[in-house]
Length: 201
Image (cartoon, rainbow, N blue to C red; front, side):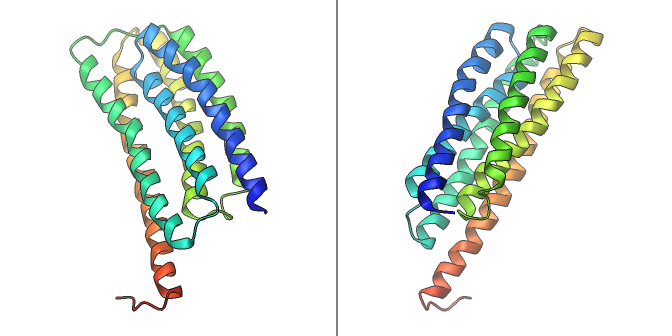
């Protein structure tokens, strides 16, 4: 796959993520949903990841490895946002509007599934950076489906606790993704050192 096609594709994915970030974050704040807000920050994170890929595709293996580690750090951002919102809501666990939550999460599934399918063709062509983008989109589909299930549970129980618990689960998912991207980037860094003739410990 040519670098030009890679850039065009990740730019499209970045635009889709940025557009839905504004939709989801606005609704999350309006209905007071921890999990939906954390997911909206995921859209912003995915926008940043894909824009960085767009800028860095022409870089050397060593620089791509460094950027992959930056990506791992970026993936942690929504985890921190989710944790902050969850702990802030513990003292007043009011349930979010289930219908608005379900409709918004359903839209997020459509956007993230489209991005996952688009990026699936690229994840073996751009090293740790495209791996980061694909992992983020894949994890987001799983999280969106979990939000839908949580919305149904909220509708049944009339409690805000399922929303808080799911927000904390999102923290764990993003930490795991960040770890995987860091490991891929570290492998690329070792490969770059080997190509440069450096001794690998």
